[in-house]
Image 1 (tube, rainbow, N blue to C red):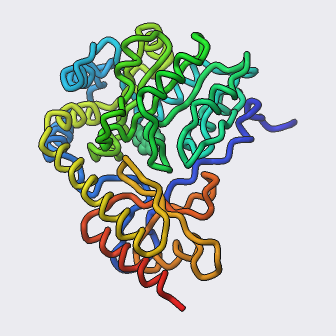
Image 2 (image 1 turned 90 degrees about the horizontal axis):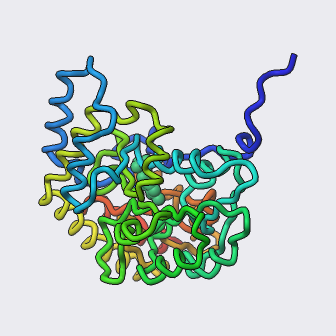
Length: 364
Ligand SMILES: *Cc1c(COP(=O)(O)O)cnc(C)c1O
């Protein structure tokens, strides 16, 4: 008798490896490897989460109505065109599940988020990689990668792990150049951090087309990564398809209530945004002064490039920082072996990283 064999494609997937958590290191640890906020969630979200503990015996309301309405109020969107998920990861997987299968192709860019190939291959479809230019999505390269088999395009804007973005005019040019039956997924997990007037998160394009969706998360600026809560705004036809295949109670009650409360705390959101902008600029400048290249970022993390000479490599820097309790993200599985990604942390963490990197670069 032979054992069960997963469907074609499944065993070709390289399992997702999360950023190091710092477990095993003695002393204080600053985890700057997973783009979590140093400010934590809003106290209002924590209170709503605790209040939900009084009713853990009840199933949650199945459509996340409370949260969809809160999102609708915050962003001026129709709650019927919103679907919530257990993290935006679930949304991305639902999209792949609904729209791609064996024989189909889905495109992402060179340094695209690793969940994309997992969702693509997990549904038996073929993963196609479009080259980036200057660590930035290149619309011409994506359009050149389109074949008659293309069914879906994954675009993180801003992109993780590079921190770069493409302006709204380029996203529109991408949409216009793609065949109408291709789903364009705009993953705007870091939209809250962008302050550029040529950027648009995706809302406008979703509102005016029937083949574009925007995914958002409460894991980053709202500080609710532990609860697994994200959402998508899409055209009625795509929202309808996903609602047919999602679990009937896919979002937990504590998650939807905490997220709804988080949306109401505008001051907390603004504090987190301003903190990130201030320290992202500071880190980019200070690390640049050490002779390292930092890719200009619009998100809550930066990409630091290291030389390839012995004693100065990304791998050695990673070891050096880790020994000091400073946990950054190595990016070998993102085709970036000579770079580390650093989440913008607390003032203390940021200063410690710059001091440690100065010591690392000054070593004989
Ligand atoms: C963090 C992140 C997400 C959000 O994932 P969740 O499942 O909502 O925690 C989505 N896309 C990208 C590119 C990310 O970096």
